[in-house]
Length: 396
Ligand code: NDP
Image 1 (cartoon, rainbow, N blue to C red):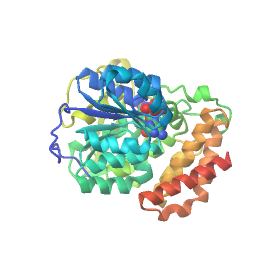
Image 2: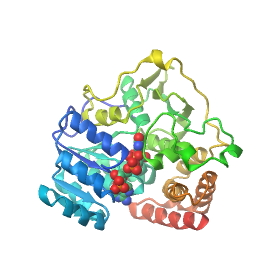
Image 3: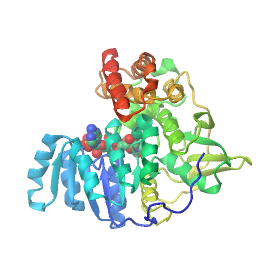
Image 4: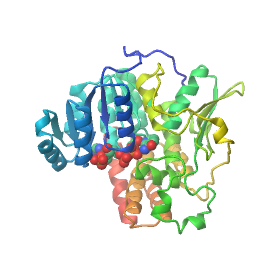
């Protein structure tokens, strides 16, 4: 298990980066990363998105990046016409994004792309040996071993943006390698905390999108409601911190003030607390090991009043235990889990299936493709992803 030194291995000593790239700029985390950039007047090299041309046009005019990339070719053509007066370069397509990441070579890149689409951009960033502020947890779920091996080769620092992993990363400064007993990964429990499996049969999309403590993109909000998100976070933590999944305990903490904790071998438990606000996590990933004043309001413990804790319910939320099973099978099985979940959640968001059909679709796809545990290379993992998408779609 790793603990962290307060020095950067690749020349960037923390504090404010000279410039920044933000991938997935039009999304929830992307926009919050840009709020942090604006707060500290960090110049922006590259902004990327998929199809949201209007959102990107507004961001491009506000931040004047050198380049904007839209993964969707038509969206790129539209954006290019809209930004003709600005002199900003606009490119289109997935391979253009990978080339541009390498070309602009920012000292820090925030990857806040949604889903498996973030994997190749993560690998492109990692190959540069610069700092990657990683919000796209799917990169690690799908190809954690490959991403880590490439980062080791290039000297890339991967600093987590996910609030729980940012918390664990901070708590790991309190001890040394070999002194960690376990990781306590907190979960809000989402909007359906305390509901039985039977009660979940009748919940609606609107109910699922009403997260009690965090305001996030629609897909991760549904993943929080199913607790698939927590399952992904177990896999993400296992890779980021080189810890066995058996040493990661999920604890439901509805107030979302304790963002996670590390238990040491002397039984000391070190936790990180703050008001729930992703701008703190993004800023820390940019400035680590330095801390700077930011946009997050201070924590008033008196107004929080009390903390509550309970174990997750594996019968009501079966995707959390399924994530432990997927990582223990290893290879391409976590990629299958993620792909099946992306397909099922997209169907739920477009109201084609009910909430608990997400459980059935993902579980059956993982059962059918558990033989994908032998996948290792990026090509094999992407192949497992594509096969899982086909099977999940056929099960809807
Ligand atoms: P959003 O849905 O709000 O934003 C996703 C971003 O990714 C948008 O900019 C979107 O572009 C872009 N995108 C989507 N599909 C593609 C694609 N195929 N190729 C390139 N770009 C694409 O997501 P969130 O900000 O909520 O989440 C982003 C990541 O951060 C996820 O991995 C999530 O798990 C993680 N995360 C999010 C948290 C949050 O608070 N939201 C907290 C912790 C982690 P467009 O707008 O054009 O569609």
